[in-house]
Length: 79
Image (cartoon, rainbow, N blue to C red; front, side):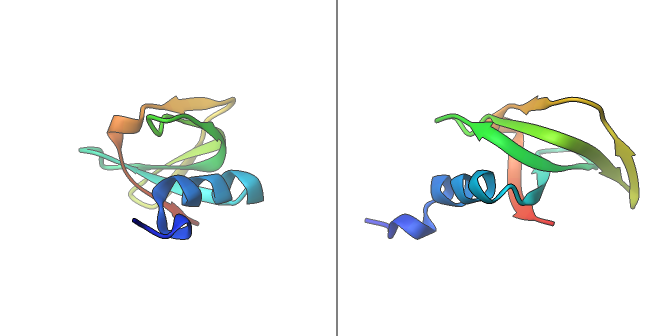
């Protein structure tokens, strides 16, 4: 069994708890989304706030919140 601190759900929980800004890399997309994770569920659907779309080094701010379906997420990392 995996140590609790290495499980993906633990990492996502830590991002929520610390309000760290993260970069979400999506499957088959040429851009990433950056923001703060407000919440998630058992399917790793994420609710992001303060969202920016980053494409070719250009950042575009998106107002409001965004829900990202878990199956479309390739990777989540800190910014």
